Length: 104
Length: 418
Ligand SMILES: Cc1cc2nc3c(=O)[nH]c(=O)nc-3n(C[C@H](O)[C@H](O)[C@H](O)COP(=O)(O)OP(=O)(O)OC[C@H]3O[C@@H](n4cnc5c(N)ncnc54)[C@H](O)[C@@H]3O)c2cc1C
Image (cartoon, rainbow over all chains, first blue to last red):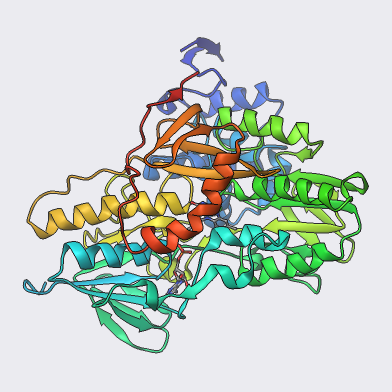
């Protein structure tokens, strides 16, 4: 696994740039990951990211967009506004979590 | 539990429920087996794909559900309203209460057009069509009969769906059908998907992507639909892209039965959360365990395709484990996620995909007892004939539980890893 320095912190990432170990994550790191994909974090961005972190801690897997919407009442449309294009993937990336389980 | 005659209750009499009941009846003859089914209809669902193109008639694919169950299996007609897991009983909509010692949930997954704004408007089953129900497939046959060219759009709302290759198959068959009817030059064929490619797994996505390209089919990826406008004839995505159509063929959001969610046994899409190897109910963190509950087939949240072949292989594992438990042994059978899907590619040919939880579909050959080497991920006439022959195998061997010579665990023999 390649290692990279983000915000002065040495972290391991996979070939798509996702953090390998979610436990090394903190909000400063999250803000920097967001910046790398052109997103400036605001309160509106942090709400779903914090939910992703809490939910992952309990469920052991990255929640789907549908789960984020039902659990936080943030409409999917807003998630597309905050994390344009591919919100599920981008939110997981910023939250330092694995990509949501591939659909089969 | 009644030691002499344990009561097995099976919810649903589709592919998986019918097989579970028949296998248990044979292997555990001292058990009382009861199946709940809402109607006496059992459709061979893969046949829905062929109805719009006149390759199967609606009559050919429908039989009595009760007639597929062995003698000695009790059928209760009704719709499940709630599983009272603590009370080990199932409540039907008509108020009937059925007690069980072991419960198998096999209520499948259902297309839910109500989940997408605008889908069920006045154009539903007309310019906004589908082939995931028998009525939808018949309506689509009638639409195609008067189709004169324009934009024909094949669209998938959200994954997972049952038979995730069906949208591709429809597209290939439509391409072929349009050519035969002299309409292909006048038709723009468009494939719209929420995925970033033609399929979920890389090697298959590449091969199938080529097949779409060769046929001049336009692919629109990463398209998460927000609404359908039947009047203006456009699909709109959450990121405000628009796809216009003259005839839309959509696969609505697929969801497990609502009672699964109401009973606290499911995920966001009402799929029963199970251990992916044993098929035993696996509660989400904080919820109570109920080791007497199992789920198979499309109703379970297994991380593999929702397909008849998965229903078949997972039933064999589940029944093996029920026999273990009956003999007082720990469960010794483990499901590997094995799926085996034929993909119709038009021109009388088909491809074959074979994969499991760990191994994505690969190229190579597939050894099938009695049928011989089939080509994996490559078009062949034999694959197509095997797919057509499967309807007969389904009614006469699969449902009654006769051996097919298909091992439930996937084999790497003949496969070419990349
Ligand atoms: C167009 C199409 C093409 C397909 N092609 C293929 C293919 O080529 N190969 C392949 O392997 N698979 C294919 N499939 C998928 C295959 O049909 C399903 O995966 C398979 O039928 C799953 O079996 P099941 O028993 O889990 O669900 P089902 O067979 O759908 O059975 C579920 C049963 O539960 C009943 N039920 C639902 N809710 C309730 C309730 N509340 N109370 C009581 N009963 C209830 C339903 O009436 C139904 O009878 C296709 C499906 C479609 C739609």
